[in-house]
Length: 319
Image (cartoon, rainbow, N blue to C red; front, side, top):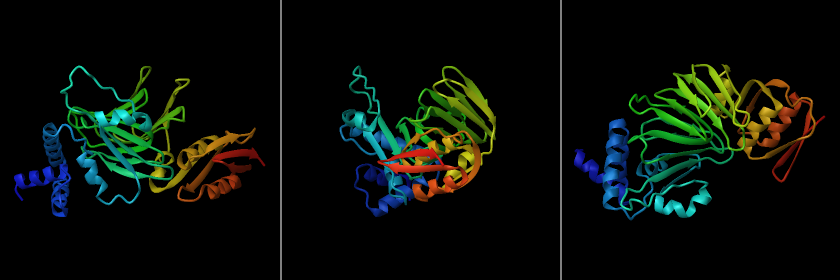
């Protein structure tokens, strides 16, 4: 099929008029690689300039929604004009300049997982991102055009496509990681004051207003957002990547650390009563596909503890 026919299929898709055959054409075109994705984005940008009043879901992500995602996830894309009215609901802060009313609208793309959900996202540059439970990934339609920046709240594993001209940046609150191409895991839940970064392959740079540290494969960086303490050390990477296969595989973890992790997956609050084993480290392997009651029963066999649950609150006491 010639390029004009492909472009026509893409234009039909942007307008929501594409039939199954046209959608197949678009999917096959995008599967050819980065150059096709870049051209697709340029056509979309060109189309938007001629239809500025119609808020559209990002075409690339809309196409992803139709390509076999088995797990529920929400991909929300809004024009600035539409998003401003519901920013509070999304927890998104939007800045709009009134100095140039004719400026192109910027769209915000959000991918979210709920509790006990995991999903995979392919970004426009072919970077692959796996999102753990209760995680939000955000980026704008400038991605791959002028930057490769994303924001993460929660936990995600990145397999970043190499691009020396546009470094890949992951923002986590006031912290950020910069890479050109690598594999790493980050954890930065809003309710947790600890940010983790574990590097599997390549190199990354972890930075904020106080520090700027380079990491090598097999290293873990732990940053306390309250005390600003930072620790960088060698680690067992399985401790930080086993969730990709639906497991929690820890060579040495404390009860407190495990319960924080479980609360982010299952969505419960933890209340501790005095417990001498709270900071005792132990080895454990769990399946996150099991009910939380079964998980807590299994933990109570290893650690002498009792647990109770009421109204989404888990109370831990000593046996």
